[in-house]
Length: 130
Image 1 (tube, helix red, strand yellow):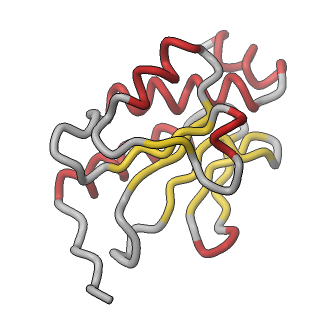
Image 2 (tube, helix red, strand yellow):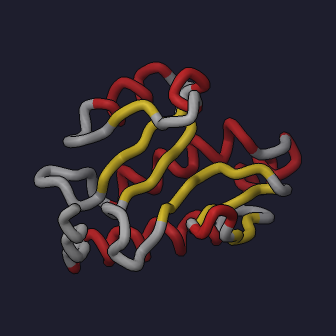
C-alpha cells in the first residue's frame, strides 16, 4: 500500500486556523478519541479534525443541519457524507488537500454551524452574546 502524501502547507495552515477557531467557541475543549483530534462542546463532538501526522489525508467533519450549508459542503472537492452512518445524521467530511478545497473562513462558518447544532442552548446563547 502506498504511503499517504504529506499534507500541503496550505492544508496545514487551514487545519490550524480551523482548530484554533473551534477551540475558541464557548466551552469548547479538545479531545483525542481514537487517536484523532476532535473539538467538543459539553462533551459532545462538534467537529472531527482528524490527524495531522500525515497518516491519513487532512480533513474535517462537521454536522450541518442547514440544507443549504449541507449541500454546499458536499460540493467541495472530495467531500462526502461521513462514514460509520454519521452521514445520515448530516455529518460531512471535507478534505483539505484537494485542489479547490474551501478556505478557512468558509470552514469556520461550517464549524460554527456544527457547534450550533450540537451545543447546548446556553453555549449557543454565549456565542450569540459575543
